Length: 283
Ligand code: 13P
Image (tube, rainbow, N blue to C red; front, side, top):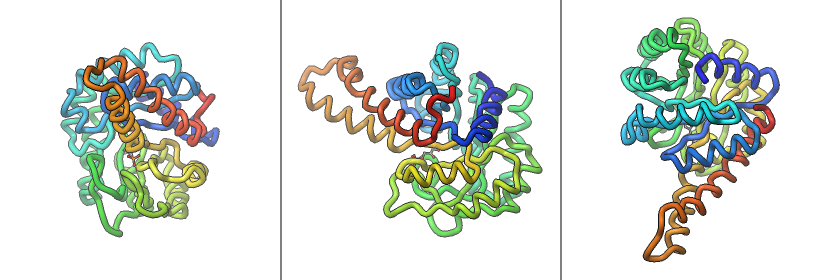
């Protein structure tokens, strides 16, 4: 799988009214859960490592098992670098064999954002690697971003300018979604989403999937979202079930016994999200 395949997958999703879900993994067990869920739901999916995971495990190591998984999977599976804040990490992941990377320069001014996306595009394009940029800001706190406050909304002109200047392959848009669990009901700005979708012919990405109600995800897809990112619910399901299984196992837990009980729980969550994105049966 390369970035050109992803481009086709996102176009197909756009034409057929669903989104390609992108799930964040932390290690091989939640990775396995995501791949199995995709196969059982016959869905195209993206599987993403954030910079903390890449930093700890290494880009080559992540790309090694992900490339094997992409080769073996019975469905389209695209490995992705999520929310890199540096051009260097994008280059490192591209060199290691990632077919898709995100450069998140949204905390900088528009000019710098454009410059950084351009640098990654220049490096990625000859290698057919897909590049996602970001305009506006995703709220919340964590590795993926730490923006708080009211000035998050993506401007239509900025989105159009960034796409025109960079020809970026896909674009994450700040429309009110947040990383992590929401305190109240998420308030997505569907009007702004529709305006951006009209202004640019680039697949649009919704971050902060965890906690957004199904009807809002599906409305966002209708208004132009082609990829939906889901992270927090994956690692929380993983870790909470791990704690339970370890408690059950007592003083002499064997890794495989524990993990074989835990990862199917993660798989169920992933399958539910594939259906929320209406990507089931679309492989
Ligand atoms: P959540 O952790 O809120 O699901 O968001 C994930 C995400 O957007 C990763 O980029």
